[in-house]
Length: 424
Image 1 (cartoon, rainbow, N blue to C red):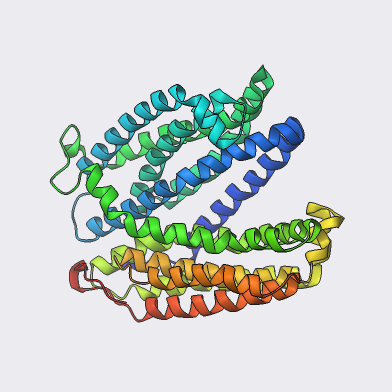
Image 2 (cartoon, helix red, strand yellow):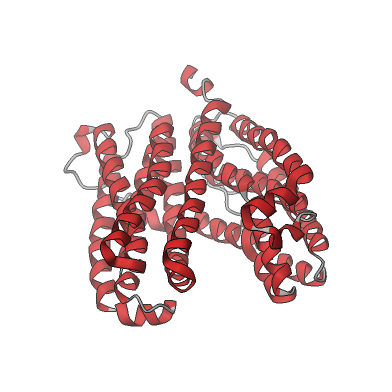
């Protein structure tokens, strides 16, 4: 019990910093390869990365599910489900091998679908996504084992090795394919690193044994439907405004809004990192029948504390920030930037409540997210083309959603000894 009490804002903040570092390196990757590959080459790389990102959502859902189950099992004094985890890993590695064969065999039609001429890179999209599942399961297991520093290091390491491998492969003449394969190699390297660490942490008695009934890979995938749907809706709520503005506003205004939206997403980065601490800690407390809302309050406090200076910077220096980072043509969205910052803060709070509810095996809150996802584009279309008005509408919707989902979270308590009953 003393160990449970020691979880505080320090670990949550550390995970937030790790995700922020990962995203900063991601921006460096974008800038570096945009300059190296040129407009046409980077367009192909961006399309390949976008295809991978779409296919990566199931992996993130599996990570959430594994973290929740491993943490909950350990809380009740059970083993870390070592046999099950090893079974999941074997199944996913076999799937990766199959994906590699299929991807390379269908590289031409895949390249056509994505809209690129780099066929070998297109053929690598499927195996890269399959290997991503392996990495996500490893991270989820280590989250459940409370190895937050190791998980955080793997986030930064993935982004750093992606850049390094990409530069090396481009330097040897692989061009766009090399830049994309840097992502594949970074996933492989981090999977190997975490795989070694996880092998040492899991119970030795489980080595070589088969997963027990109900713990096979297909069972795990079946339990991941709620995280998958929730994360897909979250991705939609996070990005649909940029799509709507692109269709409604003039090109210059749409580009400026997109730049401001990217800057405002810093609060989402923080929330994703904090959520990687929140979910397993909430699941552990819930399985013990303790009040897990304390960890939600602590995590939300981290968001609130970090949001205040960020929004104030957007208010006082938004124009300068957009000018220096994106260029003077993008600074016209400076009035919308602090409003977008506040909107993304509210969405970040929603994200933490979603992680909390998933930790408690709840899913009905997804109805609220689905309603918001439907209303979002409709309200933005009605807002006109003024960027500040659009940002205000977005802030209003995200605020209502945050209040609704957080209210659900704060009125939801774990069942005794982790009984999985559904409620609001």
